[in-house]
Amino acid sequence: MNLPQVIKDLVNAQNDFDSTDFANCFSETANVFDEGKTHIGKTEIKDWIEKATEEYNSTMEPLIFEGDSEKGFLKAKVSGTFPGSPITLTYNFEFQDEKIQSLKIN
Image 1: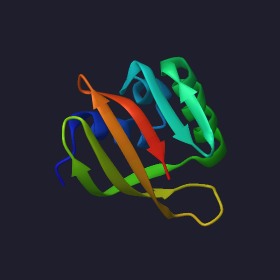
Image 2: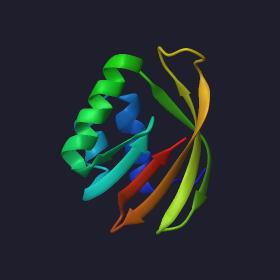
Image 3: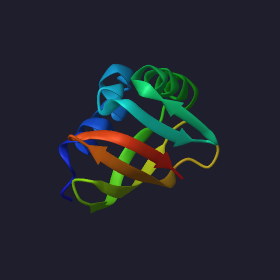
Image 4: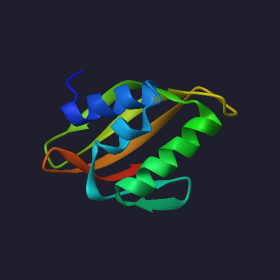
């Protein structure tokens, strides 16, 4: 599967439980929408992923990616300490200057 480098970096950071590297995949003004909440900016994104990691210990296995340099979606098998694990989630991305500008997870 041909993933953009920023998505490779995001998956590696998630699987290494590295919230700093995870947040560094995003632009300064990026936003993430997950579980009914929006997190804006790298600091909020870092705080969100740290809390999610503590709670769920989730890892990602990319299954499908379709997109280009502006937007795309990733289907990934997500495993962790949550009910129903593993599940397949869809990550909808918008990119800007090779960073993630927007991410919606469903």
